[in-house]
Length: 210
Image: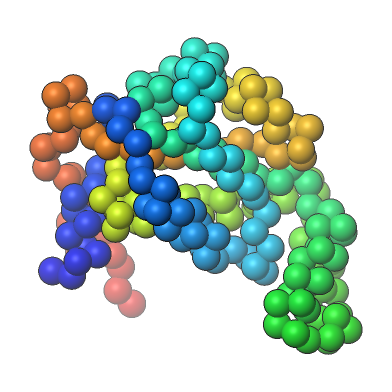
């Protein structure tokens, strides 16, 4: 069994965390994995709010997400999708490609036209749903990266997104929260699922070979 598979067998959706802090180096590795996650057209149409402040976590717990991992986590990551995809965002992305790869901006005209004629031609609702799906890809990277760092990570929906957006001032930034990831360490005394066997469908039921 590979080391990665061992780590993924170790991880689970931790229900109780003990409040222990995740070392900064481990946190940075998880954030770097998020940054390296693939996204459609490479646009990364989301932001990730990294919350360590205890008072803010408690406020989120009381008002938007009454789940015990929230106040007892080390860090809370809120994945927030862009509410709208704009021409200005695409222009900024093209300039980033040009400067990073040291290529003329004009050489990207065809790529930019494809984005403008595809993504920008769609409705705002369609694009927000698309952006949210891209954020979930980044979430997956974060969960795996956390496991490789021996950090517990619990993805969470089931929160009051409108209230969370209000607490964090996301709508003013053109963002809307879509999913939360609590990072921390399992509380072996309080979490009944810590030693529970992982339940997954059989290989032959899950995968279809053609």
